[in-house]
Image (cartoon, rainbow, N blue to C red; front, top):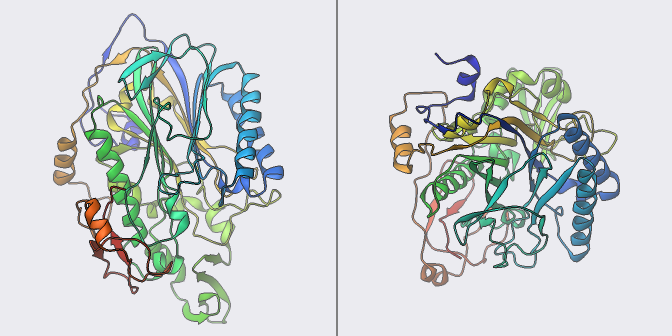
Length: 488
């Protein structure tokens, strides 16, 4: 008989059988944190100290033994040599505070190779190991072997270096319409073994909604951006399942940029209202001509904005649909906190939402179904945000803390074909979202060179290097094309 907690986690495949050493059932307390920190580097003097204080205080209060922090948008909107120095100081100050909490070993990896846009992801990771952990091993992806971590490791600037072998960096090989910030996306993957229990940790940053008009007004039932995210996430999971390394349980956490079902949210908010066009975009007014909602490309302004998304946030959980795209492969604990984005960046307004996007649960901690076998007790896991009452930038960090058993190995990991079969045969109808985009093959390098021009688009100029293999998107009222995966 399954418990309510197990049902909430959403396991849709049969539980794997773990080979556990019955003589040693002790655990390690693990905390996983997702943190989009882009905006704190826009005002570093005011926001970085707040961020460090809140996260460090959280670690001091909950006392996890192993901490993994996945960062996205490191350095802010525009990276420079000066920003690199700020990032380096940020890492130094944070680690000094952590050493006071007896985290005597750490691994730090930050991608700051911003001068190479073909590979730059703006991702980073910090792993903290408490002195109570007696044996921790990290995996070398080049030699395919674990080795005990006895001292700290830091790679702050060039993750493309051949010396960085304990981390796999990957930038999504997807060509979308040219928009510079969309290039700062990808994954970082590390592999660990804590007291004999191995697992993977994957940092991910998916694509955002570039236009509220496209995502909420012109698209139904879900937007083109949602399709981009789904393809990139499926692509990542496919790589994990199909590569040359042994398949292990894994946690994937970061800024998924998951958004609410915009079309349904708009219908709920505008029932009984009239629509008119304004300089800001679209206005929805009541019978007294009072503007209740304004939607522009980068504006989402509701009359009672914070009340609807802070005090009454539970009503929006049913519109959080994007996670259902991978429910056959990933699980998540129930959301028990308000949307994590976009919060005001003013240090004095850290509990209020910005009027730029519809609030959503962008920042998540998900895990593969077999990973559940690592948990000592599901009921003891804690899934929440850090800095609820403090300005942490536009994203609130999200964390999952749980107890991982020692010496859990030999799990039966479903193959990729098993997941495909499960997806095809699934009878669950929790998501109304239908398939729009077919899976496509990558063009060859010759294909990319043969057509040097991109078609016109809504975000940037035509004439960028591109490929003549692309998919038309007739569902929206704009001329948008999605380029297939590239190999360069």
